[in-house]
Length: 179
Image (tube, rainbow, N blue to C red; front, side, top):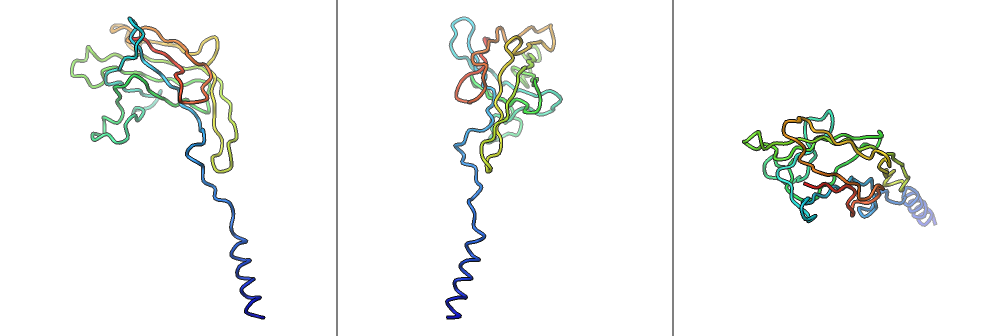
């Protein structure tokens, strides 16, 4: 009888410490990034940018686009027609420098434009395992401010439009840039 009671007590203590795993499912929507697509201004078809580096305000390194790049500096550069960049979750604006033809041996081909995105944000509780996610809404009156870092080279971004002001998912374009 003592053995049975001992086994019951051991089993009770063993299972009393069990609780649900706090693991956030990778498919759970988290804070979305701002999706920017690039287009040819003459025919509105997707257009790849050349050696684009995007650097946040007061930052020295750019956004990582390719974690598996063989050369360290190449992980900060993209040549695609779509990028995703994070917005600050604790501010009402985020500023980025967009440098086209970064590291080109001909400095005349390097062109930098600056965009400040203005928005409101909303924190939403997802779960105990995942925490909170933040969604954003671009400001209706002034969603962005485009400036040229050096007026001599001119804008490489010829036109910028808001496609979707509510930034809730990463599977849609939020901003369209025409080159």
